[in-house]
Image (cartoon, rainbow, N blue to C red):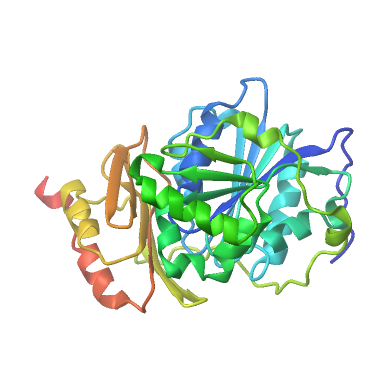
Length: 341
């Protein structure tokens, strides 16, 4: 890669990685942080999603009032470093060039590898430019009773890389869940890690200021990356595009729709409610406004945003390969028929 021609800044940019497994509430947490951003500061958010249909950028853009002071960029498809190393650096470089920033938040995919992300950030390309602060790992205490999480290498890496552990969704956790989490942390020799508890991703901005504990020498050289093209394809003449992906035993299936595609609200919610996906996210036009849908572990939340979006997007994650064609047929049946309006 050619030498970066980035103007050095006088003060290194405070940078936090906010990680956690799928569905733990990372996007909601970042949304709450953005809502608490000082009015005088300009923040940037770099998001990585597992699926190829990026949705988190639209979720954040549709639910925050401080758009002029927040820049949000997205790297969709797989792990930010392992499968999209070059696009990650391009997106980050563009953000650093765009304006003087006061803070950078980076959200790797729930199946991404935060260790490699931090290694890239601490490498020679960004030395002296980024001030890497605390890595916050969000967890759901209920997951410590499930071997699908506790034995997953990415989940374990997210725990070990953390400077601060944030136990989210405490309103949904039982005392037995907390006790099991504490036992697991003791077994992993992580019981002395600073730990905070919250509900609905309500992070305290003060948690971002803690220093990072990692050994700078350990991260002297970033890992090698596989450079894959991550640019979004243009929508075809039919007005929509389906994207599928399989990585690490997980499957994603998602759609992008032209702005003039609108869906029936009740019909779409009914459709989402019966899907057997581990995770479902959507930002969909339903008239002169959009609807934001977030479903995880059988619990669905839907809310209206203030305005419509440029594209409607919906994506689901599965543990087994779905029948994408059948899903698409039933989803398209929920499109709003203006001829009957």
